[in-house]
Length: 544
Image (tube, rainbow, N blue to C red; front, side):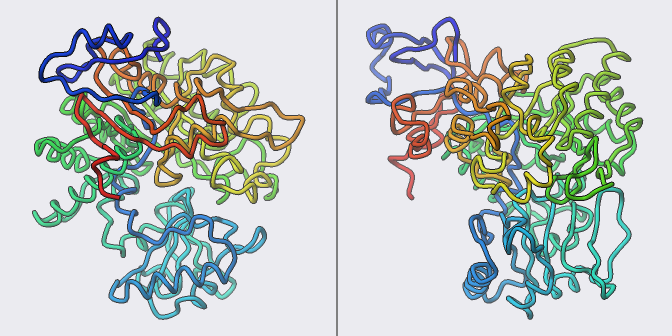
């Protein structure tokens, strides 16, 4: 990923940095008696992967839940849930992940009655892959105290049935928060749901358990070649746990954690964001940015659209912030010198966030802010050039487009509507318009595998012959997971490329990524991950 020297045969590492990159003979001449030599045997060595959007703590906490990816139809769902329940007879609450919105069929939505027919006596809930909708059975709704509904803030909904009771579908975090809390892992999701700190404060044993969960996630990331993480939820507790892991010498990945500003907070809460930025600013653990949600998701009709939904006439979605309030907050966050990263999926949300960034620039003056928009699943022709004009980073996820990896075409492409297809998940269109694009998985929403993500970016197919091809070349996709991620994190002067003086973060695959067919990229695996000159994963020495 170094334009001045795009390819090399060998690399030398010393004191956590890249000493030299060049030919075998040039690098061999630098070796000393204590040098460790690693022969890549013609396999690909790449910069360490920068995961520009993921949820480390929550993802790690879900690793042992029931995973429903690929499960289709009521009978298959019943078999998976009953088997998991039998394997966990003493669990007070059963939780599943990665459920498809069309898990029953393309037309039928899940209700508590379906789940009651599978598991009537034990509290059970399952989360959609996007983590914006949860479906719960009657026992879970009762235990959470929401069977009869509850007043919620904008953009959140407990869907009610004709009988006056909750029908089991819970849209957005305020609605399903009480259910998720029953899992006993609520601290792992606090940075996403509330942005606040654990209350009551965790006991020493609970804190140790949370560190163990976090370390499990760190190891899982390293196994996939990830050396840097932009965590997209956060609180001070997350940073404290990671600092404790670092003090133990076990922080094997670089982590950037935001302050998560929620719509019920007041501007004075940003003092905490400034404190986090001033306190944590090393190459291993840093803050310095504020994460926000402007809208929800397409499949739950909670994304904010410019024009009404194709399958829900008259409905455009409800924003989590009014445009005027978001502009005021963007101006204040930018004034503090902090980066902003906003979840905006619908084209109406994308436009409102761009308007906010433009207002911040007008109020505070232009600077290298690298404010970000996360996801950008639908946008408009008129807003595309504004990314380059405003210097806004487009943070996008190759696994997300329906049909590209694990998410099916329906119901999403029908929810979007045919007229909006040309500007949906428009990586190529944005890139050609000059936008800086970084790639990520959004784990645990999507598979953490960067290699699967690269394949999805390279092999993406058009939904129709008359829409533009949005796929990336192999080198563009790798750049999206390396150099462009470093740019988004303000570390492109020392990370994301294999250059002398840069931090020694790299990954060796078990084959040559340029030699395999695009459809075979996901048959490769990570053989070795090195972060800061330290081996964080070695396939030859790691069990399993």
